[in-house]
Image (cartoon, rainbow, N blue to C red; front, side):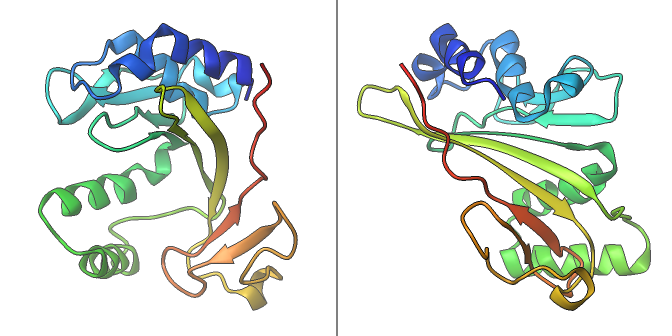
Length: 194
């Protein structure tokens, strides 16, 4: 990810628009695709906010990737990109959350859907996240990108991964042995240069 591109998107108006529900569709798209490596950005489907607080398709895609625009109702900034095979899992989580289900209920329902075969997560399905906070002037600070590699029911023993990072930025396994077991890769914070 190029920091200059990220900063340029903010210059287009993210800090000024972040509290509004009717963000410009083009800006939402440009921001959302930053979660992905450059070779996947052009053809990715983008879900964003168009005239309401409901997440909806704001750009159709023609590759295997889906991006979520920043939710203007949430503090800070976060965009997500993931392989389309993860979409049923992600969509179910969003639906259940909207219905008011607790984190525990969502966990159990998703687990049952995966165990029954209604939802399939392929080992190695990747999720990208780019986030930051804002300073007092509304400027982005603490730009951060992390990676999540889903491997349902994997364990530390089956992967050789530790349960916590062994060194800064190192991979580790989260939720081992469960349907949402995944490898976390949390690089150290990106320094922004003026």
